[in-house]
Structures are given as structure tokens and as C-alpha cells.
Amino acid sequence: MSTMLIDALSARQGGGQTYLLNLLTRLPAGEPSAIHLLAPPEIAAKLASDRVKPVEHAWSENALARAAWQKMFLAGKAKSVGASLLFYPGGVGNSAPAGCRRVTMFRNVIPFEPEQRARYPLGYQRARLWMLERAMLKSMLAADLTIFLSAHARALVEGRAGRPIASSVTIPHGIAPEFRSAPRERPAWLPRGPYLLYVSAFDYYKAQLEVVRAFHRLLGKWKEDLSLVLLGPDNNDYGRLVRDEIAALGLQDRVVAPGGKPYAELPAAYHHSLIGIFASEAENCPNSLLEAMAAGKPVVCSNRAPMPEFGGDAVLYFDPRKPEDLARLLLGLLGDASARAQLGEAAARRSLRYDWDQTARATWDAIGRLIK
Image (cartoon, rainbow, N blue to C red; front, side):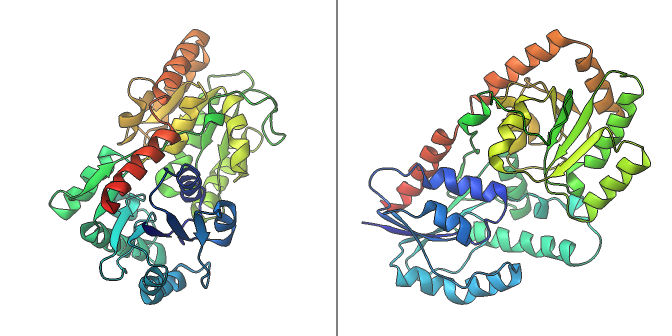
């Protein structure tokens, strides 16, 4: 029998929690026979079962405090539960007892994108990204298995390392089935009329500023009722820049920025939208793009890697630094219902490549080869 410890203390955002929920609710028969889970209290409580056992720890919202705890106590925790394998889905981890195998995962590409790092003001955030790059690379070079989410991400890391990452696999995330079926109810926070939808946390590399400017250009030519919904957490410096731009362009009545909403309400937001937008300049596995595709919506998408790796020829691409590019594509789709329908059907077909059952099976198979 094998025992596994998962260090998921950094799984505080939607993507990390969604991954854990889908992985740990799709356990393989047999091994690992016991999984001990270090995670934020709310996620640990959801996943507790006969086989998944939350581990008590000194939880802190402070990243530095968590990192210090992990460095000093994680190896001891792994040893105390008899773990033969330690999994770091957050991508950073080098503390393990002797003889314990290590699995890490590459999730956050921004530390490995110097152009994107430079967009943050000098200070804590930019320094944090610089340190994360080094910590993540060290973790991947030392691991017995590294899980990548895209071919682009693997190439990015191996370019920085100067050599291939041994013992690695590429397993993209999946799409939950509820994104493929149309919900009955339309959330009250959505506009009543037709709307364009961009789902993403606000950040410099997510290009919400350019999307707002493109929408402003579009309204100069499209006179029918239309709103833009920017759905995602916006309580940061970049979010304030975007809100200031919305006000400066006089778009307060046309742009809806409701902040973050519960994950369960996202399928309805996609299904009631007219066109999906995904403008990010840097991603690992673009979950929001995949969800919009699964909803059968026509999608206009950033042409930066790895988006074409996922969207193929089922979406339309634009340069995220050029609002005029996005405005032109949107205007063409708005005026052509047939093109919207064809593109939406192509997106839905393409999205069938991404499924959580398949993701979980491939992940447990790769981990299982280390246990045997």
C-alpha cells in the first residue's frame, strides 16, 4: 500500500481549487491507498473522505508565512504520515524526507515571461515573480515527475533550463460537463440585452484595457444594443486602471464588471453571451477559453501562445496589443449570424478534446508509474 501527501496550501484561487476537486473526486481504484491533503480549510472540508484525509496545519493567508512553514515542517509532516510520494500541484516544493518521491506541476507561466514581469511596477510583486521563477525551476529540475499543461509551457521551461525536463508529461486541464449544457436561468447580474463576455481575473497580461478600448471603437460603428461583461476579480491596481478607462471613455452604462462570481454561475454567463473574448497575452492552459468553446460560442482570441494550441482553427485570432484588430473581428461577427453559428459549432467540437475524466486518468496513470 502507498501513501501520498499533497501540498496544496497555495490552492486559494479558482483554478487551483477546481483542479484539486476534479482530481480528487476521480480517484483510481487501488493505489494510492491513502491521500493526506494539506489545503486551505474550505477545500479540505469539501474533499475529505475515507481515502482523502485532511492534515492539520497552521493555516495562514500570508504567502511568506506559508512558505516558511513548508520549508520547516513539510518534510516532517510527510514522514509522520508515512508518505512515499509528495505532490506539489502549486509548482514549488523541495522539502521531502529521504526516499520520498516528488511530483510537481507547472501552472503559472508569468514568472517565466520576462516581458510580462516587466509590466508590474517595481516592488513586491515583480520581486516575487523573479523569486518564483527560480523556486519553480529548482522544483522541476529536482522532481521525479513534472506535469505540464501545454506544449508551450514545456518549451518555455526547457528553454530557461537549457535542457529537457526529464520524467515529465503534458496533460491539459479538462472542461466540466456543465459548461456544455445550456443552463435554464440567466443570473440577475448579467445585462438584459446581448453582451460580449470576457472571463478572467484582472491583470496586466490579461489585456482588459485593450478590450475596453476595442469595445469603444466597436460602438462607433455598431449602433444596436450591446454590452461588454468583464467577469473576474478586479480588486487590484490594474482593475482600478480599467475602471478609470471605462469612465474616461463614457462606457459606464455599457460595460459591466461584476467582480468575481461563484463558479457555479459561470456556465450560465457563457451560454447567455453572444460572443466570447479571450485576450490574455500569456497562459499555461487557458481555462476560460476552453469553457467558452464548450458552451458553443464563437470566440475571438489572443494570438499569443499557447492559445492556438488549444483553439486550433475553431476560433478567430487577434493581436491583444491592437484594439483595432479585436474591434474589426467583433464587428464582422456581429453582422453575420451564420458565421457566429458556424464558429460556435466548430468551437464546441474542438472542446471535446478536453475532459476532466481524461485529465484525471492520465494524471493518476503518470503518478501510478512512480508508485509501482
